[in-house]
Amino acid sequence: MDAVSGLLTQVCLNSVSYLRLMDSKVQLNMWYYTRWISGKQYGDLYILSAVAKLETSPPTGYRGIVLNVWDDSINSQFYCCLKIGSAYRVARAIQTSFYDKQTTAIASQYICNIPLKNNTSSRVGVVVMDAIAEPSQQLDVIQKCKNVTYTKVYFPKSNEGKLGLCTKIAYSKLNPAHLIEWFEYQKMMGVDKVIAAKQDINSEALRVFKHYEEQGILETIDYPVQLPGDSSMINRTFEVGGRVFPQFSHDEQVSVYHCKERLQGYQYAAVVDFDEFIVSSKNQTTLELIQDLTKQYPKAAAFTFYTTFFFTNKSMPENATLTTTYLQTVGPRWECFKNIYIPTRVKTVTTHTIEPLNSYERKTVPDKTAVLHHYRECIRGEKWKDCSQLKKPDYIMLRHKKEIQSRIKTQMKLINTKR
Picture 1 (cartoon, rainbow, N blue to C red):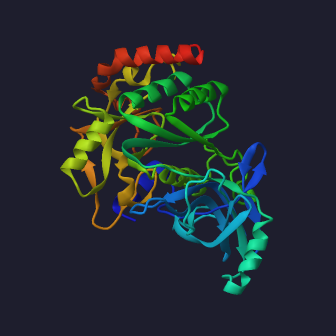
Picture 2: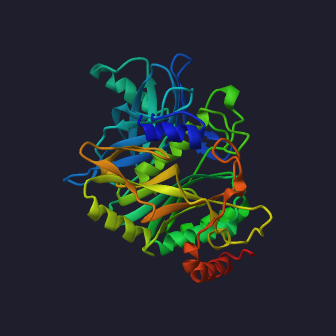
Picture 3: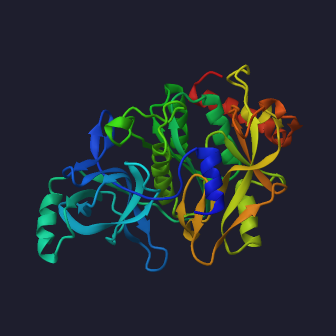
């Protein structure tokens, strides 16, 4: 782990460090959530999603299936069962990435190396063996495949020249006007797709999500209300006060893994939250900005942005726009930074870090070129002892005020929500 990752661990996450993965399925309440229990000595694998892995060189197609999981297993051998119609194909599930090992339900990824074509009827399941299966045991594995629960395989497509965003998990009560403001800004900035996990959010926010899903810009996946893990952590949440560390970082990372795979066909991708906006000083769209940066740095795998914090005020009306109401800041800071990355050039991705493939590198974007605007309540602590220090005005987003407010009004009428 590099020094940047360590800094973020302390400043932004109050948690742990790097990467890992996992898988499984059970129907829990109204959430489809797969779980195979093989006995105490094996532990469990909890699957969030299964995504086909794009072949990056001819012939085109898919070279396997990636499972994005919480991994609570111990010394288990997992086998993927690919079901297409009534036929089964079997391959050993190989762990390719994990966040770290400082908790029980570890964010992980496994790959099933089964070449396949885009087939919407494809389903994948997992069986557990106590050792690597010999060739003579192939029929035993297939027989077990008939008794597991299957989950849908997503097939990402190539989207050359396009930008996709990952917002991790949307949870609890979200302000519908602020969501609309965020989506409309991203559309103005050339964003083609947003991937979001949703967990028990308010009905007004769900209506906004449905609206943008219908427009085609948003794709969501349900996140389990009861998160995987041992009984001591069963009531943990994403809310401040309900988080359990270091498990919290793993609970977020599983959604990042899902996004990484769903956006693998895009030219550019980024992990940003619903209160974050990438802003170019030249009034470029985000897509234009990143295209110019790629030309300037042809060996870049990712571009890292400084963060400018704008602290919100509870006394302001709920329908006040974030970007044109809050204008006081302390200026750009090297804290909780975010990246736009090129999916074909990175090994792993977390909320704040990327690991480039060999021969590629991460480049820092000068704050005079572009920054990330982050609108949030001030959290007093070692870094923010006095929130009244926001004395530097930043009016750059006012250039979009008229269009953003018009867009919010139009979309609210379409959604039939009140502002």
